Length: 111
Length: 112
Image 1 (cartoon, rainbow over the protein chains, first blue to last red):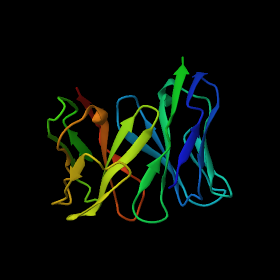
Image 2: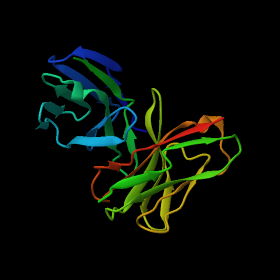
Image 3: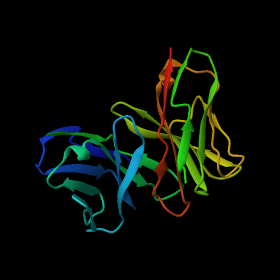
Image 4: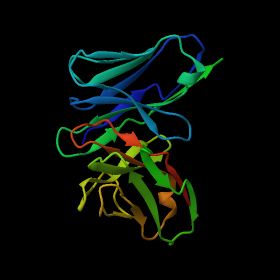
């Protein structure tokens, strides 16, 4: 079965600093999804990447999928307290309707 | 649109009790799913449905039952609650041809 790993497990940064979260798959990804979860709430969709080498940006968040489609990174520029939360990567399997998530990266941004 | 709604928000059960977690969506999504979230383990798929009358097991289905009689509703039933089912449960829905999922606010369940 497909498994997703994320690093780091948790991250504490000072406001204004840049940071990167990584997601690695044991198999080729057929679509990689990034979600954000605020503490105690549901998940909010951020971005989806499908093609090798693809890069997408939304406000100060940029996500990339490597050429081999087994690793993705999420980069936040000039972090703000509003970026705090848990970031999860997810992927659909290439068959059926299953969807798997990584364990998440807990981000804290200190003002 | 209300999106995906879940009830209740919090629930405490005793071992052996049964209950149903409710989930509803108003986006006419064919696909609905239930996840549980436990510390350090991310979200794990319990059951999913690709349309009314069709359900299938996910990664951790034991101890849970589901049914899908309408497009809008996808209840999750715990027949005999166990402490190992203490978790936060999320319902999600999406269009069948897309993987972008919409999540409910979650139900925090404690089994004592």
